[in-house]
Amino acid sequence: MTDISIDCKGLPCPQPVLRCKETIEKDGPAKLVVIVDNDAARENVTRFMTMQGYTVQAEKSGSDHIVTGLRADGAGSEDDCTECAVMTEAEISATVKEKILVFVPTEVVGSGDDELGAGLMYNFMVTLKELGDELWRVVLVNGGVKLAVPGHRCFEELKKLEENGVSVLVCGTCLEFFGLTDQRGLGDVTNMLDVVTSFQLATKTIRV
Image 1 (spheres, helix red, strand yellow):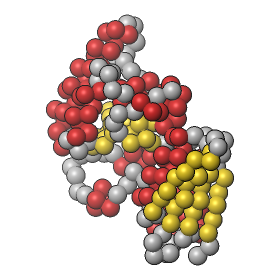
Image 2 (tube, one colour):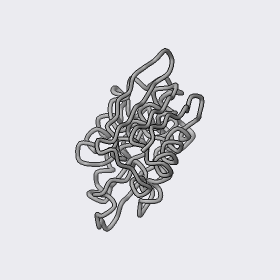
Image 3 (tube, helix red, strand yellow):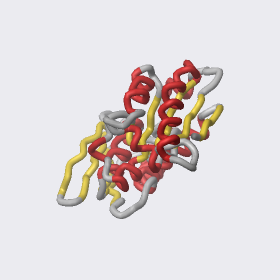
Image 4 (tube, one colour):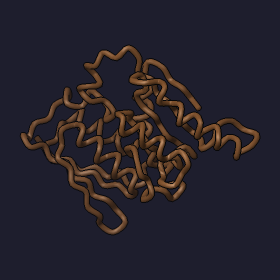
């Protein structure tokens, strides 16, 4: 197997992950080096490569991040990357009656008054646990990523859901935009490939 290096600097989400996916599917390299230029891309690429069986290390070089993935057995094939990073073997094989995805693209519910909307969002998060085991994943994008920051009114409720096994994905590009990358206190940094795949896997979607 050949060693491959790909330069993903300047590429918007989810292009770095898609480039990784394409390279692994096509070439199955024993060593894959990916160069990105922001924290969100670094976390997304690291998580994706780890899910594909690579041992991953990331280091910073100037303004760039160099993510290096190694396969312990030196093996690689097209079949190794048939699923996206959000899919684990347990999820693929599980037979769950319902897998409810909650999509949160905002910090408030509705429009008209933000104070009222913030209160409604809190009430919504408190009540989500009533979905029980059918609640599978919460995806936070745009202003919704602010809910993943400690100190936000909804943070503790989301944390409880996560501790009870609910997957929480937080948009990396959105965290970067709001300057909140280092303040995230829960969930996994995600990209649009993960989000799209989440919609595909869910049996039901709720949009706030």
